[in-house]
Image (cartoon, rainbow, N blue to C red):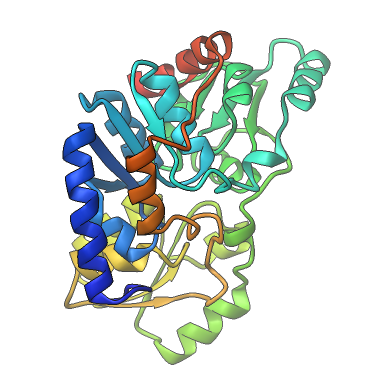
Length: 308
């Protein structure tokens, strides 16, 4: 157990949450970067693509989204008839904040006819101004589905660069990045590699280009877990947010995983606690909603991705 709370407290809160969940006809979704104890009370744990699909498919009346704001917003876009709760309303995403509607509109004015591929890590307003969404799981597939040369990838230039390289295409890249993945350096990788020379280096495409160049495998959080599970290798250096280690240890208990850097911690993802999940269910707040005109446009952008 690698919880930040005691076993007794975990069991007490988990029991309360289970009761409230039944009462509210709720489903709890949690991202792989959440605290281990939050992952363990969730009905479904996944990456942003998997969670988007779950949010679209659920027949629950209440969705409790243990993640960051844009994720809960995506659930609200896809399920306007459901109550969507974000247990910690201040859990934002600095990368999502690096692109704003005014800036995007100005860019589209400068480059008429540009097709905008919008990483799901963005606000509903930005999605509404885009042509199609993507996640780290399907960015390559989404870009591949578009014809023409003028394609703008927002807001993560690292993921955009990765997709462009895989496809051998030229993309226009918005200057945004994930602050957590950006902290990882080649020196970090080399230091851990020195201690564990036989370990495979597995990283997220939000990492900088030089990190991806030294990786044995690059993939979304779900992709990294699948790769580790299917690999014959027994040791892995993990270049993504620390929360993924909990699932890696659960899925591959016999294998060893080393975090590439102790700095790979997203403070926003760690804001959600079991107390906040319980209180969110109890009070049905904080609730995330999206204005209808924005919701309709943004939903179309998300649905184009899900249709692929």
